[in-house]
Image (cartoon, rainbow, N blue to C red; front, side, top):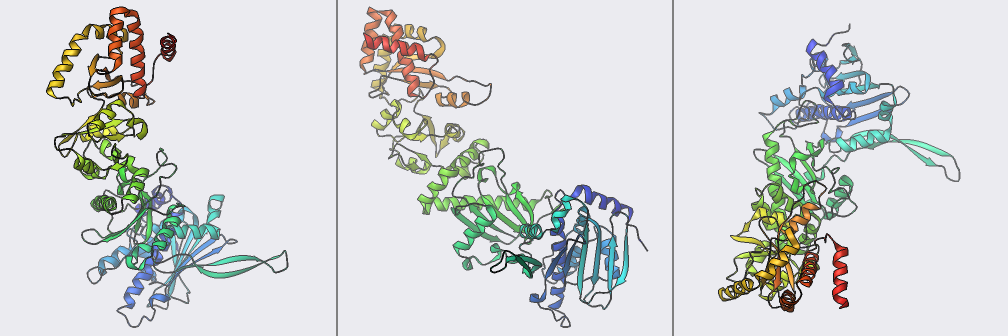
Length: 622
């Protein structure tokens, strides 16, 4: 006699089939997890019940495919169910035998039970037109079969079964999308992806095809194979794992042809218990800086893959980290495909962040070459971590930053820079440009080096924005060498320079009129050694920022408040004075050439290159 699901169960079953699960292949994960639960229950009872003769090595889960009948069968030799339990567990959706068993046992002994909701079984109806469950409980001679075609209802009848445990037979729906679940290689792939670390063997009879000796004909033979690894690498003792094993796991699971740069393997017990196996790659993947790249760690619940990419476990600035987290202390939603809002998840994420930071700090201190390789690949992410958080993460990340410097053009940390500073230096000087070599040739850099100051070389477009967010490091202010406020003159030198600028103010007025709004001021400077001119800026927008922002594909354009500075000790100064007195029209031409020269030195474009080229040729031809 066919029985009907309860009204609420009927609605839930329809929801299960059409809405709750987003990925059809999940059904096999759920059924294997249920089979594992059933074995766990019997194994636990065997530890206290001497009448149960089975040992752990005797348990297994078996899969079988019958293409002609379009059936997929999942069999276990676990605890089994009697008629009442079939009715209770399968006739009422969301009645979880696993959760009840766990509640009953947790006071006596901790035991991992995967199933939480009792709904996973019904994911079968996404792919099956009908499902039969034949089960014999461990302490009974009788077996019963539960049969259902979905929302129509179900039947339970007495049947025969020689062995204890449960056999689930799925008759797959017609159609190409369901045919794949009758292919050995697809089943193997699904097991490997989701259930590789179920702690009991998952076996299947696999057909092998070989060419006959001295013949063009083939012969086939079938043998039982174990599809899963059973023991996760991360659950082994660290001292028992060789580096080659870590790297092989990394290659297999994260599809990187190169070895990882660093491995982080840790287990945490306490309020939230979990294990992590993390890898820092040796290079950025090809899509790392694209919108297509997805960050996240694999999330396992007791060895069963729940999420391929759990983005909540990693902050953006550590998005390069690959790896996994295995825990049983998370609240999963009904499909186990998504996470509920969970404090334990937040706690795990916070701890992972701290762990990565600690490992990188140790690497920086103990293996500088390795760290520099890491920073070359992923340092930009750390910088964005500071910038995008508006400085909220600067305490965590600033000591992990590296910048090339004028001191042998090697990487230095901010701490190392400060430790090199002369006693009277109170600022951290930096210069911006496309490459270290180009920055090294900047006139402003040359002058600071001459006075014995170290300069940080900012070659990434985000560097100066990071410096502005940091503002200070150990009370030392960041200052761009191209800032007009940089002044290393003595009081006497300042007075002398102010006097000279006053004397030349009429010349500078003509020059400013020539350049119009391209510069806000023109003046003499002592900051240059051999170069005739340079551009500096004042205000919050530097020349480098102007270049970076204006290069972005947006309508937003900005202009730095530029100042043309002329070397007070260069011959060009005398030339300008001569032109002012003898040939003012030539002064205008020289002004345009000098301004264009200053822009080129800064790596800025020239608005009228043809005019400047003609002017230069005209001057040379004289």
